[in-house]
Amino acid sequence: MTEKVRIAQLSCGPEYSGVQKEINDAAAMVDAEVFFPDIMLDDVREGFESFGLDVRSPDLKLAIGRAKALVDGKIDADAVFIATCFRCAEAAIVRNELRRYIHENSSLPVVSYSFTERTTAGTLLTRMEALTTIARRRALLAREEQEGITMGIDSGSSTTKAVVMKDNEIVGTGWLPTTEVLKSAEGVVDLALAEAGLALNDIQAIGTTGYGRYLVGKHFNAQLVQEELTVNSKGAVYLADRQHGPATVIDIGGMDNKAITVQDGIPGMFTMGGICAGASGRFLEMTAKRLGIDITELGPLAMKGMGDKVPMNSYCIVFGTQSLVNALAEGSAREDVAAAACHSVAEQVFEQQLQEVDIKEPVIMVGGTSLIQGLVYAMGQLLQTEVVVPHHSQYIGAVGCALLASGFVKGE
Amino acid sequence: MAKVFIYPATSLILSDMVARFGHEPLGSAIGIRERIQTPGFESPPLQITPEEPKKGLKWAAVEVPSGVRGRMAVYGPLIEAAEAAVIVRDPEFAFGCMGCARTNELILFHLRNKGFPVLELDYPTSDNEGVAFVAAIREFLGGLPKEGSP
Image (cartoon, rainbow over all chains, first blue to last red; front, top):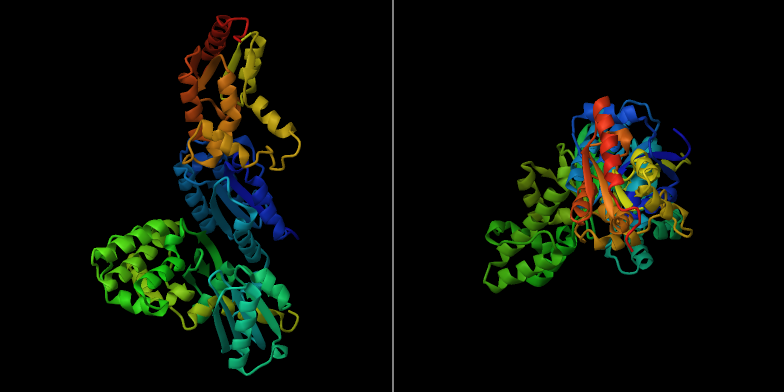
């Protein structure tokens, strides 16, 4: 592998959308470089003809030809980034099929993204970081046991979590809503240390993840600052004791959702995003508030209701809230409204994101929303499978960080 | 001399034929040259910024993919400036290809609805067809006014 991670770009439209610079900038931020695989015209023709998807767009034909060249080993790359225009049906088909094709026929980590002209490097950063981590840090991701005394801090968009681990066990936890990023982080660190009966000096290595990872990582001198895609998938298979073989990790977060297929603890395909906050933990928080209950009561309440009694718009948080208010005004039972809200969130994640990854059992749900029983039930119903929720699932990012940070305990 | 939009707009052969028969070809080379030579823009390789898709709104609505609107920002002004068009249907890759099928459909739609002279030809697949192809283009271009309209 080259020193800089070389990410092959397969795309249609980013130059004309004005977002190519954003893609390049995001790659540069994680010390990677994006390049367009150079192939001959005959390879394009042969590539897309043998692939069998007869698309009209020449740029998509070129993308297919380049994908074939990557899989055939004609092009040297460490990872693949597939990017096409949001809303283009033809590109969506190609994007999905190429991601699947590369995933199944090569060991290259691959991520895809549908961009608009408003896509920024910041939006792409987590995905690029995950790609480079998988390409660069396979040895670290192979770690199966936590050693020494380490701490993981997950500075998420809604909540901040910390975990102290000692000799492969969780000995302290802290959880607070995210207000001021550093203040919340200091708060959860204090809570976790108090529960563990340890001082900050006792911690041998610290890892941070989540939206505030860089700021918090700098503040605590963390050895590992890592995006949540790889950290969460590692934490999930560790806690669910499924470190070997396939798994699918679903994390419905406060701001966005992650769906990750994992093989032996290493992420393969992943999607991150969501069309609207209608498919996020934030919508469930709003639902709980409107129902006059604590978020912790929403899951049990939903389990008593019938979601299909209340139609709910799952594609937009505003319209979803409108459906919720209308349903209550028409006299719907609170239980049914709670169940409909859970079903609505699960449905959008299922329709918008889970179609883009190949679901492999076991399906592991993590993050704070995995504690909402009604949501887990709705997801299980949609996927027609039993969903695993491991212990400490709400601390998944922090646990993943603490586990991976132990790779730095002895200067590894 | 008439301004003749060529399709596919990347075709150097078509561009050359239009120029050779006394008219001004309007193709992607012109539109893209502006985006490469304009200093200050930083989006490689075409130096297109998110402003282009906004300009593209004139030809493609907001729900149309951004890449289509960005491309239309390049091709739209050329179509507007054009006084005639030569369209080659189903061209071979090497003849000049344009990246997005949806953009291509929109460009052809605009050209056919401009109300100016349009020559539509199938891409030739044999020598004889090739000769007839060139002859048809020459005849079409020969019939266009030598002076551009104001």
